[in-house]
Length: 144
Image 1 (cartoon, rainbow, N blue to C red):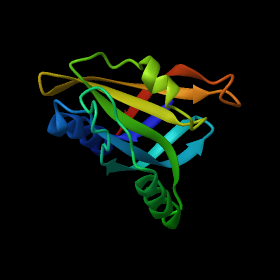
Image 2 (tube, rainbow, N blue to C red; image 1 turned 135 degrees about the vertical axis):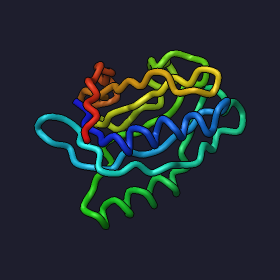
Image 3 (spheres, rainbow, N blue to C red; image 1 turned 90 degrees about the vertical axis):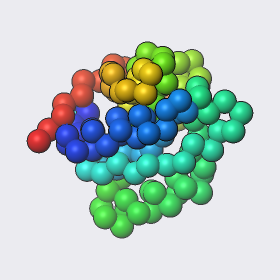
Image 4 (cartoon, rainbow, N blue to C red; image 1 turned 180 degrees about the horizontal axis):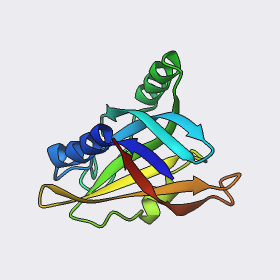
C-alpha cells in the first residue's frame, strides 16, 4: 500500500497538469513501513529528457543524490518516484519498467488528459535483482 497525505497527492497531480503536455517527475520521501510506503514529502524534480519529454522522463543523478541527502537530513528515505503520462493511461510502460531500478519503491503514475489529472495509480517494484524485478499493482490510500 502507498499511504500519502491529501496535500502531497494533490501536489503531484497538479505538477502533472502544470507540465502538460510534457511529463513531470519527482521523488517520494518517507518511510517504508510494514503496511507499505508512507509518503511524508514529495520533491519535484526536473525532467532532463530533451529528446522525448512528452512521453519519457529522467531525473539527473546529481539532483537525485541532492534529494536523497535532503531526505536523510530529515530522517526520511526515498520510498518512490512519480511521473505523469500526458494523454496516456496511468499504467506503466515497457520503458518505465526498464528504467525502474529501486526495488521496494513505489512508482506513481498520473494520467493527464488534455491538461487535467484524471487517474493516479501506484506500482510497487518487487524482486531481489534486475533479473527478477516486477511491478505489482499497489493500492493508494490518501490520508487526511
